[in-house]
Image (cartoon, rainbow, N blue to C red; front, side):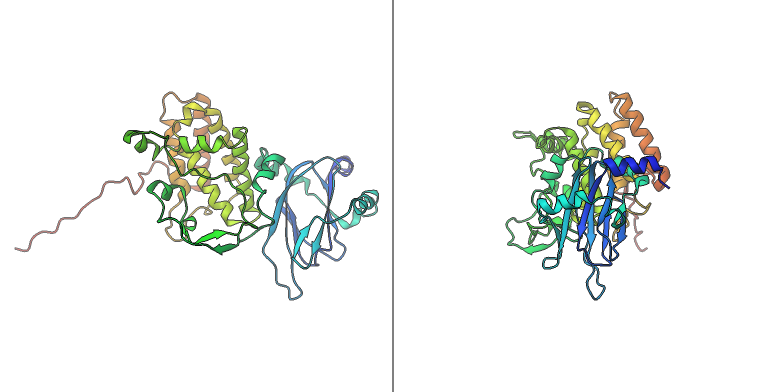
Length: 364
């Protein structure tokens, strides 16, 4: 049970989210908590100020549940946010007048019994996974879509290039190599674009070879698109939450790209150790929230994260001039994922193991 004083404080200082006319039996959630709506449901109360993820899955008269749709929202203290279900487009929209919002504000205590309380016991976990997300980052990532749904809608487009380079095959997934398909602009999130040029202009053959393995140049280009490095890490937090809570698969694909780029940025270990330190901290909290078999590829039975983290651990722990604090944190993180997931980072990767060729004896 929540402490009465805390409950009173959250009621007085927390935010309110009204979700009006949601079909009965629909799924409505905020952060890691969701409910089935009953007849008298009108929204959520006592929301701690800050960034939260709101989502819903409507149900029709036949009991069929729609794909999950969601959005991030930055609540201020005492905010009263009102959204209404539109049955024609089957979405929650912002069409309430100022006068209607003011009426709801004036009747908060009378409407209290129709509002579900924010589960405060889950707030600390939510903060650990969303600490860097700001209103500005939300505006940029969600600038393009009119809705963010479970399965990103695809439209047919002409093939405009013959195929990816070797480097692009490393950075992009098989799903993104389907050049004849693009995401519908109305549903696609505005992720930071991964640069096609993975080495500096005018690089010699040696540099091109180096940056085919070291993603530092790619990472620096992506960081330059934000005002501060923490904003790219905020994007990393957002795409993880989009997938884990919002069930948006395209976000999981982008999360994998970002993980690969951060882990393989060898030069950044020396040039910007605090960035890598913050990255490991965020990844630590994310790794606490997934099942132990979450990252195993169903088809190949190979774990992409084991391979990627092995590169990170080598880049940091085998670099004799790396920051001592970064080395310490990296070693702690390695021990954590080894124990939690039973991963073996000491085993020689299959693609680096020596090839054994059996010689057939000639018939005598």
